[in-house]
Structures are given as C-alpha cells and as structure tokens.
Image (cartoon, rainbow, N blue to C red):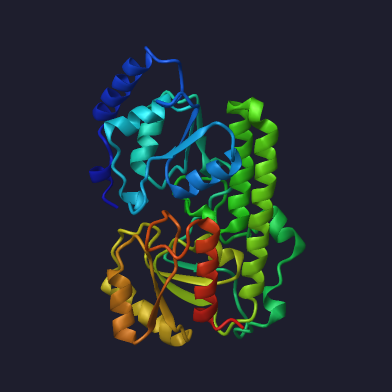
Length: 339
C-alpha cells in the first residue's frame, strides 16, 4: 500500500485543522452549513450504519469517501479535514484508511468512534480457512452452527489473535454478526452525542440487528450444502465471512487491494483451483482485477463478482448493503455448487 502518497503530511493536516477551527470560532458549534448536527463517516459501511441508526432524526450524515472511490486510495482535502473538526461525531474504522486515521487523530470532533473497538478484530491473510475438513464432507452436519457461535462472536481458539490489535483485518462488515456488534456499539455512542434521540436510535438499531440476524441465517442456510469450500477473490477482504460460514478464502493479493501478487502466489492459486475444484475467480467493483484476470485466463475458470461493499456505485449489484450482500450470497452459492 502506498501510504505516503495517500497521507496528508502532519503539517498540512495541522494547517487545515487550524483553518477549520478559525472558521468555527464564528459559528455555533458542531453543525453543518444548514444548522443541523453533523455525523461524518469515513466510508460507506460506516455511513450506512449511521444512517440506519439515526433514521428520521434531524441529524445529517456525510461521508468522506464518495461513490466510486476505492476507500484505501482516499486522499483528504483540507475542507474534509475541516469537516472532521466541525462534526459532533466521527465514525471511522482504524486501519483501513491511513489518511483518515491521521486526520481523526488531529481533529477536534467531540465524539470519535473507531468501529474497530466495537468488535474484536482478527488477523487474516491471503489464505483464510473457516475450519478444517475431514474428507471434504459438505453435508448438513458439517456446517451447523452451535448455539453459542452467533451469540459469542464465533471465535476459534488458536486460529487468530483477537482484541483489536494493530494489524487486524478491518473488513468486519462482511460478517453480518460482527456488523451487528458494531451497530450496537455505535448506537450507544450516538445516543451519548444526541441523548434526546436515544429511544429512536435504540428502536432503529433493534430493527437493523434483526435484519442482520436474518441475513446471517440466509447465508448459513444458503451455503450449507456445497461441493467445495474454496473461493478465490482479488484481495483477501472476506476473511470474516469465510470464518463465519466455514469457507476457505484464497486471496490473490493480501488484505490490501493494492498489494500485487507474486508469480509464485499466482502459481499457487492455480494449483489450489485445480485441487479444490474451484469454478470461479471473483472480481471486485472498485479494486484492480489484473491478478484475477491472469488466474482466470491461465486456468480457464469462470469469472464473477464478489463485492467487499467498500462503496456503492453504478457497478454495484444492488443499492445498499443488504442488496449487495444477497448478490454476494447468490454468487457464492453458484461458485461453491451450493444446492
């Protein structure tokens, strides 16, 4: 990841922050130009949660990452850094967007909510295995969730380090259960910022968690009877999803979409595809697909779209998180031979 290219220098951020504070001195606190209280979200999954929880309350939600922009590539303008300091609440996910992390650290926002602290982060790499398989038996017994898995966060002892440590995989929203954990935590933070709306926020959060629980059940049922566990994707954004549903993710590159796969890794992917009877190489809507195209061409595999939902644009297979997640489920079912 070319971090240096994306980060504003400390001097630039400090200058932009000072400028924004100077502008603020004549204003009435943390509100936007329309006088509404303001929440600033770092990118789509955080924006979606905030809007779902806030609902019809008279609070404006803005995002730093516009549709069609790959979040990892975000370069903040001085005005955006200023928006962070004027906001009542900033919602971001530390470790995903270095430029945002630095700007938030220097902002004067009243409430800074790091979504990574609202659930447990885990370390995932280019290969992520949901669990071990004996003889690749994909019947009902092998994929039933124990009652405690969904309630307790589906942790596997010894598989990963937990606890939100530096270097953890930030793609928590691709697991509906972990996304629900983040929603519950964000609800509490927003209620602290806007106590008059506490009851409405709770009602909206309960409705959202119910929908996420239903989505989780759809994935569990939809992927239960499959012919293979392995799926290949452009970059390893789907570690949490793989772990939740007992799948084996093989990312052509690592957790960062800009990490280029080595020839050795591409050769390894080709061997895995043959061994595991993989039918499809998944592209993405925002990231580069060069590696995926190379693997597909060399192996004769089909191609499909598996969207990490880092943003919604005209190429997305749906208009919101739930629609795109269901499109992902349909794509996985077809690729994995689920019945």
